[in-house]
Amino acid sequence: MPQPADWGERSVEAQAGDETSTLELYRTALQQRREHPALGDGTLTWLNAPAGVLAFHRDPGFTCVVNLSTEPYPLSDHTSVLLASGPVQDGLLAPDHAVWLEM
Image (cartoon, rainbow, N blue to C red):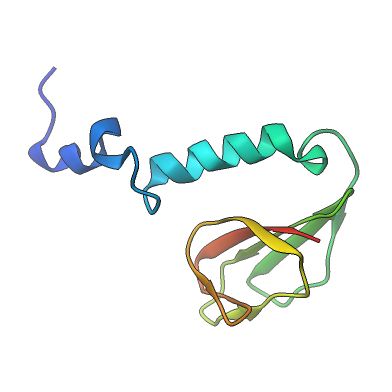
C-alpha cells in the first residue's frame, strides 16, 4: 500500500544503526531486559519523587526514572546508565525523558 512520503524517516531502513532512533532504543531495551535480572520477576518499589517525576526500584539493582516535568531532574548515585531516551548530562535527566539505571 502507498505510504505518505514523510513516513520514510520512520522506516526500519532509515532507523537501523542510528543510536538516536526509536528502533534502536527499543532494540536496546529488549536486550537489556533479557540480560538484567531485575527486569524479570520481582517486587517493584515506588520511590519518592516530586510532581511530574515517576521513579521505581527493583532488586537486584535497577531503578527507572521518568521525567514528565518541565525541569531537569537530578539522578541519585548509580553505577551506570543502562538505557536512556535522551542524553543524561551532569547527572540530570532532561524533561520528557526516561532512564534505566543500574544501582
